[in-house]
Image 1 (spheres, one colour):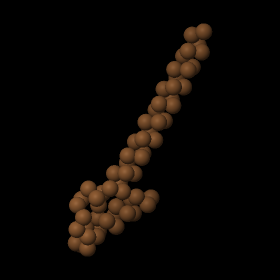
Image 2: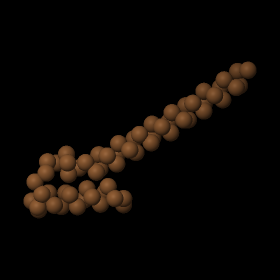
Image 3: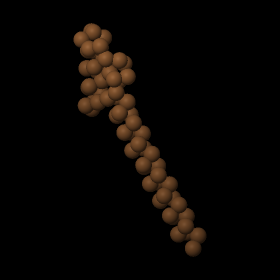
Length: 62
């Protein structure tokens, strides 16, 4: 469990016990940011794989 997940759980508990009165999107923001970073990393990996495949195809065509 990472920092974002722990923060999200802490914020949810604080929200449900009415210690904080933040809106739900702020409470869930650590998870949203974490998920966005994971998706960005995945997209970069896919782009690298695609670029590698294209490079190998071009080499094989010669």
